[in-house]
Amino acid sequence: MKKIFFGLLFLFSLNCYSQIAGKILQVRPYGEQAAILKPAITGELMGLKEFDDNLRIRYGISYVSFKPRLDTFPVIAEYFSGSTGFAILPGYEVITNYSMFLAFTGYDYDVLKKDNYFLYPGADILIGMTNVEYDTYYQTLSSGSDSNDGLLAGIRLRLGFEYMTSETIGLFLEATHSIYYLPHMKIWYAHQDIGIGVHYIID
Amino acid sequence: MRKIVIFLAVAFAGLFFSSCKKTLSDPHDYYPKLKTVSATVQPDGSVTVKGEVISEGEAPIEYAGFCVDTVPVPGMAEGQAIVDVIGNTFEANYSGFDIHTTYYFRTWATNKYGYSYGDVIFLDDIEAAPVVAPCTLVMNTVNIGGFSPTTTIYMASMPQLVTTEWELSAQSGSTVMYFRFHSRPRTGIYITTTSTTPGDGYVNMIFYSGSSSGALSDGSNVYINQTGTDSWEMTICSAPWSLAEFNTRFRFPL
Image (tube, rainbow over all chains, first blue to last red; front, side, top):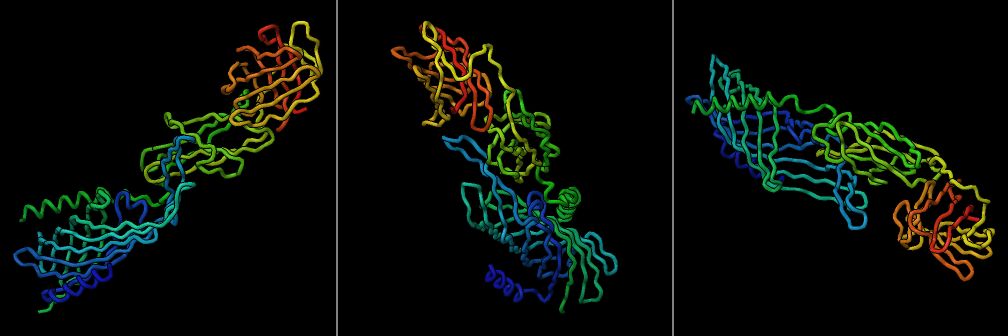
């Protein structure tokens, strides 16, 4: 995972059109994930062009490491045996690692431009990987460690506001909603984030 | 392009603001919240346990039930009863308790996020109301009927699990009796059966007396009072067998 991360970072750094941006954001899991994961603070590094004919392209990467909301999560197993019949067995799950690597590319469209202010919606295509590691225990049935790695793909919708403090530096605030599909789990997940960033334009 | 972007912006706004309040601040709120309402001893010595769903959590209840054990915090799998929730209440009936033992009852329920427990209720000395036989016989005696004399029982064994049935025997100077129960005897009125694998609430009894032998016919009452953890009293009044009527009253073990 780290090799992929730094490899992509290197590629982007080679081809950033001399316009880069960094963003610090709080990622808030949504839906079922919100029950088990705390919001996480992370960063994004991206190439971000200037608006040209109301449009600009962006592409970048992000890595998120989530922490679980509980030390142990109560889980059950449905169990049937010929001698004892059907039973519900209690157990627990301990999440030891839950991380996500994302690469994205998309467009912003400035619907409102006034002086040095820009208001823009946008959308990205997401691809990435998840890595989940956990320990499980089911009374009288099983215990052990396992991991669940796989790819993800989805879209991210965005609303942003940017203020150019000078001809080369812009400060921006963005909120996004991401929806993505994990084929190995056959499930849709989502998260939201709010972040602030710096946009640096090198002529 | 402009229309697409505006559409995406509206979709984003809808998704973002409609979902802001869906994360519960306390992760335990995703799980059901339960109350163990009562555990009531019934006249037959069984216990009716009632539970209440205070909150389903963030998903519908999938399974609900009770657990019971002799340790203060019973786990879900111990003495597990899975029941239906009707409205927001559910109940189960337990039987087969030992006298002079404390039992702890607890509710549990699951939803798609996991499971949770209710509080624990305990009961001491779970004991059925004594049963009263309709005849008055001298203690520790047996009479197989006809012209046979009443004899004194001098030995009665402790009930023991033999393969799948609980068995005990009693012996007087002339008569040997063998009783077979489905489970460990407890206070109640049992019904005689000629089946050697009696169901719950039934008892099979055969005897040998001199040159006679027989088995109690189906359908007679056998009155048993459990007087202690390992002590009982049995009375049988005029129970028919093939030749006569059988009477006995004795304590066991003796």
